[in-house]
Length: 177
Image 1 (spheres, rainbow, N blue to C red):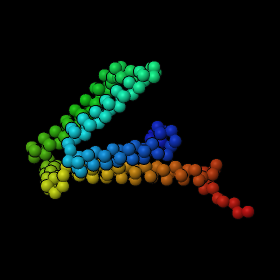
Image 2: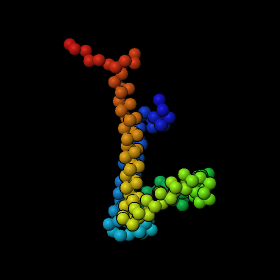
Image 3: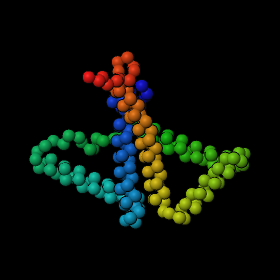
Image 4: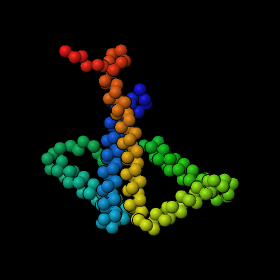
């Protein structure tokens, strides 16, 4: 049994498929907002925050009107110092790794890496001239979700084959009566 199967609890990786669907739906909504409405990502974030603020205010007023205590006090919501440090560390590591790769490529010590970076940047430049950045990001998100679906479909098929096995580990055969 794999580590991911132990963490999901059901052993079939269905939790990961649900996450992929959620990411794909959110990505589709972001793509619609940015590409078809010609709005920026900042506009999307502010729209989401306005909707959350208004809905929380309405719920707070309704709870107060009906004399219901608020189950969670939003003034006490805080992320831990450890979570904030891990987020900043991940971001710093990612930027540092990218900077290191670009520095090695720019100095010319590794010719293969230089040509790989140059070709990738040229392809991104050509792609940026042909389509908008939002479309490229959405296509990348779709490809990532397809990869997640393919990876999880293998774990789901492995889970199905385990259910078809008998007690002694051989495939259960249907008895003809």
